[in-house]
Amino acid sequence: MPHEDQRCHACNEGRPFPFFANFNVPADIGKLPNTPNEARQSACGDIQLVACGVCGLVENRKYDPNLIAFELGYEVSLFHTPTFQEYICGVCDRLIAKYDLKGKNLLEIGCGSAEFLSMICRKGGNHGVGIDPTVGIPSHDRCGSGSIKLIPEFYSDSHQQHIGDFVCCLSVFEDIPRPVDFLKSLRKSIGNRNVPLYFEVFNGHRAISQLEVWSIHYEQCNYFSLASLKNMFQLADFDVTNSGTCYQDDQYIFVEAIPSVTPQHVSCELPPEFNHDLNQFTTAFSSRVDWWTTKLEEYRTDGKRVVCWGSGGKGVTFLSSLPNADIIQQVIDINPVRQNQFMPATCQPIDGPDILEVEKPDVVVVTNVLYQHEIMETLASKNIECELVIA
Ligand SMILES: [Zn+2]
Image 1 (tube, rainbow, N blue to C red):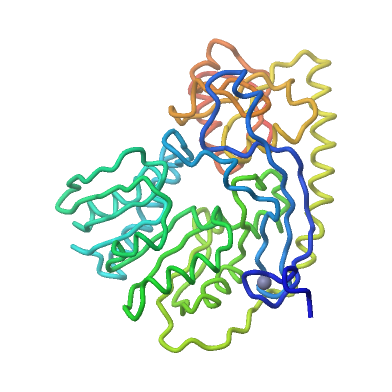
Image 2: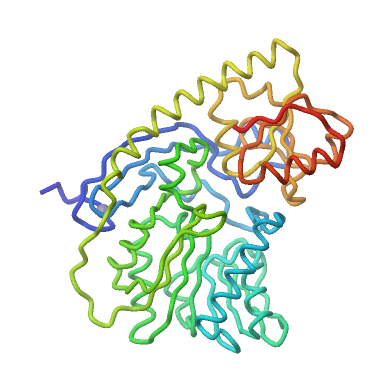
């Protein structure tokens, strides 16, 4: 049997093995530096991904949440993207219909800017509580025929009085260290009430298996597959009632669960290709870094003006992984909150797309292929002709 402290803390059976590392990467992608000097001094941390062959949990063993400023000013909302707005509206309608969320008490763990919570409260006349250290100040406001209360704290057991009829958590669980411990604590707080949960996370295993090498960033400490996500809930005494992939087919994965009435021994399940998918990722990352290093030198030689589109996690990883990222002079982002700030560590200024009409690019590097068509339309509307390359 593995030594006690080498065992997986999620399933307590497997012995996690390392498969990928990236050192000295910017820790914080949500709160951006305001000056180039601040950008140069951005907190950096190491990534060492380990995987458990029993429950499938993939996590960054070197993760230190203290390096990240989860506070007011932290901004990773995708609500500025029409593609995402349409998607999240569909999730909202589905959950309201399925769980009859009308006039109910809802809790959202990690509500961010509370866009989803506002939508589900307004549409269903629900009373929502959102708990998130980034909401700034406490507030309690009407929202349609319902209401929203925001609490600027990390969710903990001390908030259990806010567990009402439904609990949701979107794009946050992948950032919570020791995910099974977190769920066990939530399970204990729910007690013998039949409170359904909806959890949605980034489909980390899809990104790894499809060799999306820029998708690994410091802030995300867990990379779930549908199988491992379900295992986490079962290990914490929840029954998974529904699960699947969502957003642009399979960008995200979700689990709907209810507390188990009779806890029993869980047999974790993983697909047979699990190890193979992980092992090919490191090779792909190195060759992508080499390819881009050469490509950027060609652009430098040719005197090309190169900009990067997207300042989110993929953009941060892309720039900070390349030794010659200084060839990229500017980063474009449509989210106004992220504009007029700087990329951590690599220091490129972030601007809105309008600046490209004045300072025309020769090359636009798209960090997230999902928004390629939106970007092409924006460039066309501004009569900007340039080379478009996917990072
Ligand atoms: Zn495990």
